[in-house]
Length: 507
Image (cartoon, rainbow, N blue to C red; front, top):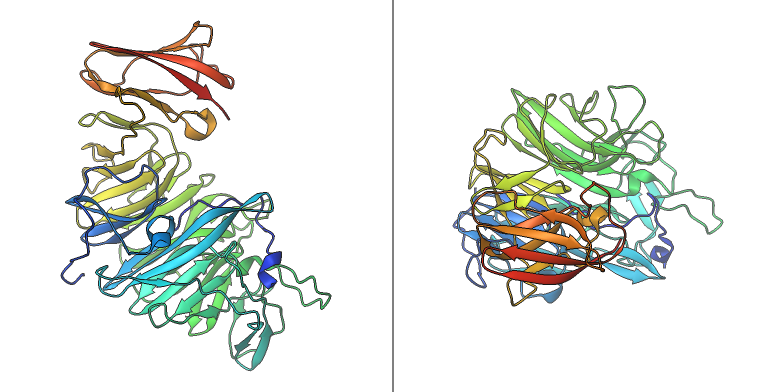
């Protein structure tokens, strides 16, 4: 699945610059396995049994029974940049990197490069982004010549999703739309989807439109600016049906180059929203069920929700309406959804359990209310994995809400030689949700938050009884009021030591 590092002030971004079963699993390891993740922010995953591939802001990793292992390709821009999409199937593994760059005093999501391994991650090939040449201004489709905007720079050419089958790789890129390689990434071609004003496209028919995600401003009046040309998700079902999600709907391939598009309408049997940020599928009972993660695009009647179809898109069932979901995962009939307000789990897709706060009595780690960005079911460990900005949650059972609990896997951030610190610092309650006060293990501990003139604001105690190593704070005083920006003091008292420090609240 994809990562959500992108910054988009609106759905349409300025693109003016663009016109100018595994075999023997042995990989090149680069160090001992770790029991903690390399970073607490894990934004996308893919089950690659017996491991789960983890895309993070610091490169690619995998997780399995032996813990976390770094994957090194030997290319610095692949090993250190953010992984925006990762997929593994058979001997083929693919991931795409990107970053946020400053351009004209604005943050712009930018693609960097692709990585491909055809031997189960023993060796890697670095692949340049499949950008167009400036002369790539036409597409040949059936008997038509379609005028096309060449995408020639990496800004907004970010690959948010990918799908593998044999040596074929499909990618969903924002400005570049859907693209395909049939030779493991050596060469690429564009995939033509229907424009916004058409529900299907076939090489057997004739068309006249401008293939571009932005409207042409050259005076030729050929149009463009179609939301369905902005790619965000791609998925192939077990039965072999290929689906592509865009900002303008979901598209199903019904012939090698023919596509049918399904979009939102107020009718409840249609999509709840047109921006399809993720697609997945599983066999429910005896039917193949295809899921779409729907976000609002531009229509006032559109909603955040999940939707699924069992008849190839002709009708859709809506569920979790109003919830902003980032990723979905499956195990048999069961489905798990990771979202903005928490984690949802269902055995039928209609009735859902929900949890937003997780605690691990064994490690004493806590993940309180936060956003959950990624999800996967690990066949190797027979457990669910859910990624957030504060660590990785692993269920202790294949039933997410079975009562067996969860393990919380976090990377400790050591900021002080004394063994006591506040993190993050500066602290943004709206963005970070919680600040963690860390200290040496103690059976008795308190944290006092004081104003800069030493007036007590809030006194905190551990959630767990017995030995504790951290206490969390939500940025509020004893009366539940959110504290204003500024410098505060914190005093940590344990059964054997005390520590003082400064903490800056800054939105």
